[in-house]
Length: 476
Image (tube, rainbow, N blue to C red; front, side, top):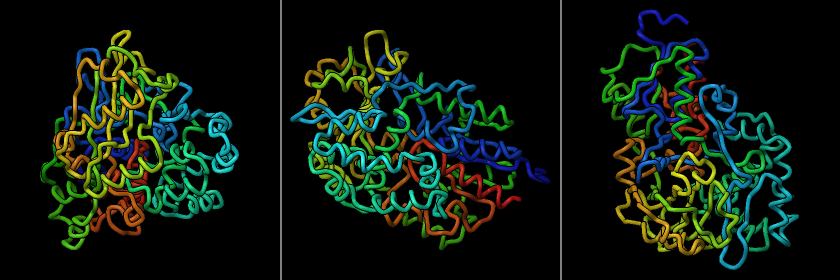
């Protein structure tokens, strides 16, 4: 496309997975693209650093990537040719229980079902109908409101997913193991599990593990960003790191500017070019709970009571449905709990390059109230010790990251938010505001492509993909 008197066709502010997805989509369509990134490295939440001791590579934010490997857009890109290698075991996640063996989520539906005893057939009835064409269902689910390509599957998924996770768990299962497993998956929503639509995310994470085992990126999540940057550069796109954008005057002339930022950052940079009414609506955007994260250098693997948990990429630590629901409800209400639901990731158990021989990295976080200042180290480590006695004895060094520190490292993580903001029934498809095309703004040159647009958080790049589609539609 000819860019006339402009310096570049499109500028993307921010290089998270959605910003890089938008940039590559535009570059694939023949546009000249420039990405500006404030940090010294591209990737946003796709970062990896030696946070504790030399030789221990920790993911700074995003760690395990079921939506990355199954993304309708990323899965089509030649990222393997640009250095990305997914690694996994045969277990996506483990859910340890106090009074029995852990539930291990494997690719085989029957292998999971048989662990649930009397609920085995109920589990199969819940998930099997959606596995006939999960990629088609994902393509419909990971986007803005539109006529689905798989209307029957989407309608059935919508009917079940519209339920609160607590209701779906009790309806689907008669016993605690099945209910707890669904609750652990639903907690990825960062919402009270009594809220409508939380059942959708719980069900979706169950389904993802039956399509592909949840993987990590060999060498760290930074490798995903590096592969995307390499592919973008092969298409002629450019990425400038260490280049924060504080005003539009700092940008070259462009036909379109896409913001892979929070609504607050969009207003800060481009507010003067946006109507006051739109700025006011963006100001009402709800960001929700943050996270408190810990990274450990360990002298060996986590000593789980059920040793089979050691090969899972993720361990959902939280016990029962009631406990998990209480933890997520507390964070949303601005409260803290002594028994938080904890996401534990075991990247170095899958990828030996992450730690010195015989040693391990550890990674965990829990949800906390927005901008919390409470140190959750004791609560998180006590929860892990509950299911992995002796865990603390393996710690060589820990590094904690508070919501304020997350925001200092990435201005999009306002108050420690890592998923782009509340994704409840009132803000899932109307994010950041209610518009026919949520990626556009009242200014025809400006677009938003971050996780604050549908479908929301996760390393899938689809927010960027759909925003780039809106740009192409506008420019053509």
